[in-house]
Image (cartoon, rainbow, N blue to C red; front, side, top):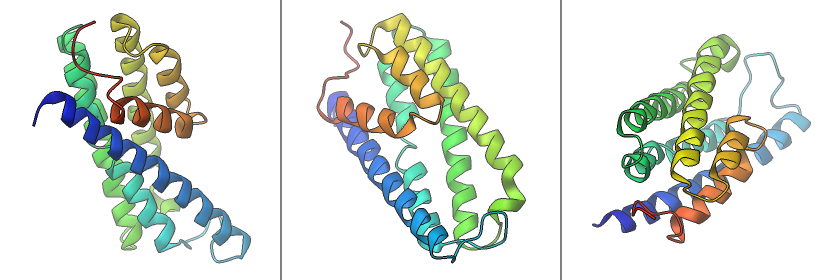
Length: 174
């Protein structure tokens, strides 16, 4: 499998993550509104947590794809970025798996979740710098910073998934 084909598969995984995130948010709103989840307590929805596992799990290949894209522009920083992204996404996925099986409750693991979010945001900030340095993709710096803000994360996932799946973001030098 060549690099271009691999990046397209990663793009489809990122799009699947975006769809899973939308479903997670939707079912979370439904669960809170009907009273089956009460914020700040040890109540949860297995369905919401399962979609959260899929949301973070589908993103795990993304740091490696970014490494393929940006290694020609800043090899060491790209490697550090890959390690941070992989650690954050694997850690967050494991946390969500622990939530699904009720080994850990969200309210009890807020510190771990915050650490994972900080590392994830740091990864996106470094990736924004790499996008700035390489000019790949156009407006990549702005959109990676938007994703790091967590408010713009859904927009970022759809945008990035589209670029990768369509073949518009490649590892070939410009």
